[in-house]
Image 1: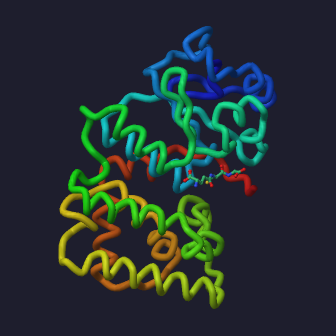
Image 2: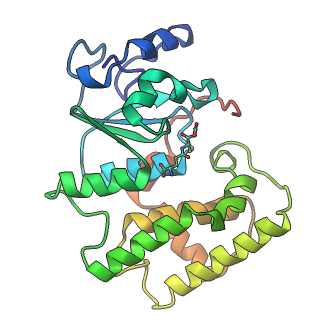
Length: 250
Ligand SMILES: N[C@@H](CCC(=O)N[C@@H](CS)C(=O)NCC(=O)O)C(=O)O
């Protein structure tokens, strides 16, 4: 595939991007690459590095020590809907992961795929079956309608670009209260993470809580300390510190 842009490759001028995307083929990934390919893995991500789902996959890949190329898909120009991206990713959303001639989208599916396809790498989901079920529960819940008002009223753009001081709606406030209640229950055992060790569910939960905290919400000290601990994790910091272009709302 001719990459849209990679970690090491030059940025493709905007005018050329559509043509470049049109030339992409999911099935000829090893032929005719414009840029140096670091590995057999490619993460398709949003241009601004603000997607919580891209975040989850980016952190998982790094935790596993897997080398990967990354390609930006400009959602603000609806590149995800181009036939070439849609046909490979199936659901036409980022993140998508290409591994050789296989492509999968949906962040949870990507994380699970990485766990199973690279069993020799460090685990990002708990090895204990019950802890793993709990981690999956948290990940599903975070992606559910219960947290939608927070995602809408405290968009991830407010974490990495301009903060908001807009007051939460009644729905937003309810969702925020529940998020804090859920987190408090998850940490009631007194440990540092949801399970005995850090897992990718902690990263997802901390990201959701940061939507509130970064926009000025005062949360219980225990929750704040938990979020800070997860946020300082080196793989998380790589995402936080990503170089981001000027934001274009979409
Ligand atoms: N449930 C999906 C959500 C993915 C998602 O919502 N991606 C957004 C970016 S954060 C996207 O691609 N939006 C463009 C669109 O849906 O057309 C996942 O976990 O990966």
